[in-house]
Length: 341
Image (tube, rainbow, N blue to C red; front, side, top):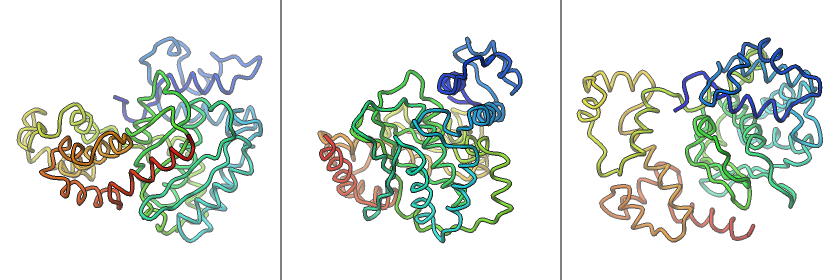
């Protein structure tokens, strides 16, 4: 499990791989930003998010490219600031995203994108040319920028229902799951991020001063503030995913497992803005979305796997979680996959 406010050394290596400049003294650069070069050969090493952010900014300045040479065109220094300024001028997140995606589509040759709204679901789709897929790090860097800016514009985390990618699963993606969603799917026909369409109606009310503060701390604030917190709540969700829902403990049983009282458990979760029931619902939602992408699994079987008494109870719960019934969600996913096949 990823530690709070730290980034895996795997992502440091990815950033250096994508951004390598001939003649660059890697050890000197890492030491300058507060990363011990010896950590590069330690697979479990983690670095402070602020140090990774300093490396990010140094490489961007060195290359004059905020996308680290991962596209034939460069995303010149100042692009993130311009993206935020034009997006924050829109009244709602829908307008902000459309404006921001339009800008990135003009700037990046291989990453044109489109915002699609279909009833209760929304998705950002990369309209990539028929070529080899990008590396996972390239896709996740793009999603980090887009999702991070979207969360800042809305003033809250935008929950991601799923991310699908054309590339194969990399050897390491724990941090990607923490930053974005546990529901990552690889080797898919297209690359897209799926979330609730209700988020598109969120108002944008950001000032110039807020923009200055946001940019002064980017990308560390994006890496940490808007990712899923690595906390007691995240630990509980991780444990729940390892067990069939019908075996999930009640509050008292969970508290005993954690060697704390039930009242302490409730208080600590409340401090993180969570409840145990909300965590259970969140894991059920993640599992249901994953299984709905598999057409051979019936709604009745999904309901049973999730511990619901019947299919209608599952339908009712899913509409509450995702703002869409399971049938509509499955048809959206499968129809798009068939069109792209």
